[in-house]
Amino acid sequence: MLMAKYCFRLCKLFFLIFLLATGLQTRAQTISLLNAFAHNDYSHKHPLFDALNNGYNHVEADVYLWHGKLIVTHILPILHHKKELEQLYFQPLEACVNNESAETSAPAYPITLMIDIKSGADGTYRKLEELLDKYKSIISGYENGKFVQRKITVVISGHKPEKLLKAEGTRLAFIDADLMRARQDTLATNVYQMASCKYSKLIKWNGKGQFPEAQRQRLCAYVRMAHQYGEKVRLWKSPDNNSVWKELLSCGVDLINTDKLVKLKNFLLFNNKGDAPSANTAL
Image (cartoon, rainbow, N blue to C red; front, side):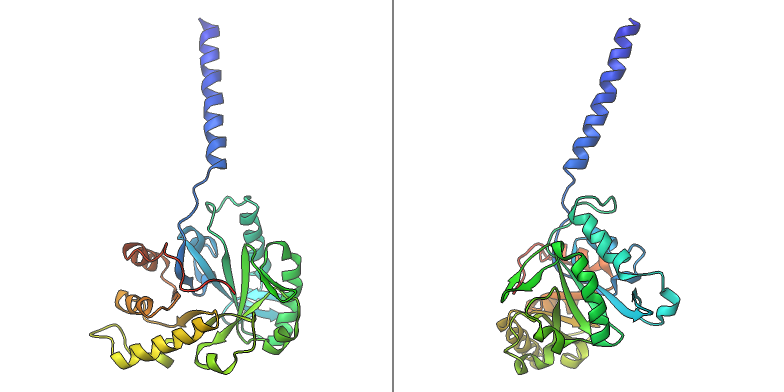
């Protein structure tokens, strides 16, 4: 009798261990919100992971070069000197790619990490290059005249080292173009991945009443132009409301910029936009 009870408990233990192991191996993949962009991602309680766990494939980090370190902050790097880019983003992303992260279920790839450079463009980029080279096995690149897609794609905005990048035959970073100047630079193949501008430069509508037709046509024209050159379109500082988001998507805007992760997620899922293919593919 005692032996039977012992065997039963042992079998039960093995069964629980099996279920746990199976669960770890078959973690469900997070839904992919292809139209969602996590603006100032580092400001959330759990940088990177709050975005990934809500299905975001595009995240942004503001970066300063400060005393030889790449610090993630919008202003005053001296107050945030412990928040280094590598520890906050590259190490966790590598862990995700290698299925070693306990912070998130398997995210959908590719993931775009936008690095908004707040300090000097060239000096910051040279330091960033060292970091990109360290993680080059997971980072998309421009190699031998071709774009090579990997799990993580790095796009630079803010103070952009455009001359340096255009001169490099091999690199691991791309540039967020100025949407307002998209037609003025048509020869920089495989330099630009995205095209962005401030919402108010194109649109004055706050989401109340009807979207003025002239503003709609203006936006659609710029979106078509960017798509012609293989660039995803993003408008930053757009109003965080459903009416604006709906019109942006209807005009072909690829990425909705927001700090309100859950609100945008719910909107995209409700409107059946989050799992639809993007308006254009990678370069």
